[in-house]
Image 1: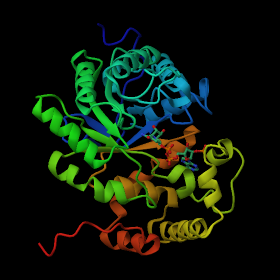
Image 2: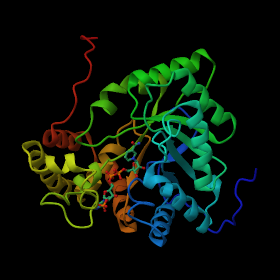
Image 3: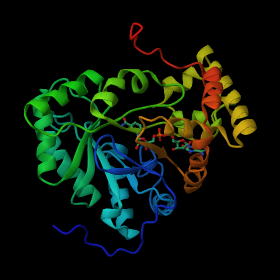
Image 4: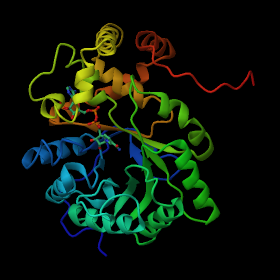
Length: 351
Ligand SMILES: NC(=O)c1ccc[n+]([C@@H]2O[C@H](COP(=O)([O-])OP(=O)(O)OC[C@H]3O[C@@H](n4cnc5c(N)ncnc54)[C@H](OP(=O)(O)O)[C@@H]3O)[C@@H](O)[C@H]2O)c1
């Protein structure tokens, strides 16, 4: 199969973007990548999708994340269309997609059965207009399918050349361990990374539960919602501005929106205000830069997946790259003092 069937008209220039290995693999991923949840193919369609992807690619972002379920398949369609129209070289790109939720209601149209993993992969590739993705994620664990079936099916997809690696998203450390052990026992390829939520107000799982996975397996992470959906930009401090994520998706985010007015919500916004002050006074940046740099400086972060509804948000958010080296132990301590969210680590009983 040819790598691509369209002419290359845009050359990749990393523009100083740092790259990291995705966990223990040889695959290099940019510290900041771009995802399409709710935006690309959802609230953003047509030419604006192209503007967003072009802005990202021209700034050194060559990794794009989507999922079969994003905008009911339209995210993959739009991303695939734009990659072709921009004339991006396939080998310059790292494309990741995710399977689980499916698009139809049939009993075999979602989940992680061998049937859906294999058929879902075919359908995702068809929508993307690609021969393969670089990483295919199990978007959620599926307790109703034997783990051996899941591991074998993802290995089949890899052996077919439809993906180079497989990975997990929002799996428990226990489920990941099980997949690892089955792969080890059967001489199969284990998952390589976890796509997990990590931001200043959500830390337990990525910082405590997964710690043994980083240490034992060099498990990678592709982090989502590093800005807590926009809360860590400060734009929701005084309510929900029109045309923003929480305004556009009121029903979906009902729970989060309701929490804005309770004690924990008010406390959270108070912390965002204090973080803004720290960012401006000590780092000469905005709170969004501080929040993104904070996730990126974590040694277990492979890539932070940005979300953007406009090209300017990408340009703006990439200023976080300059803030990473400014997060000295003293500054990190001040951030901890403000947020007070550091989870308790498991005891080593004095060892
Ligand atoms: N595996 C999973 O289960 C999972 C779950 C969620 C996400 N993800 C992946 O992670 C990616 C990122 O997640 P996310 O979109 O939740 O990330 P996020 O960074 O927390 O939120 C991104 C949103 O914040 C707003 N924003 C971004 N930069 C801004 C700025 N400088 N100023 C003001 N507003 C700004 C934009 O929304 P508005 O402009 O519309 O307000 C943007 O769409 C997704 O696209 C997806 O690929 C994966």
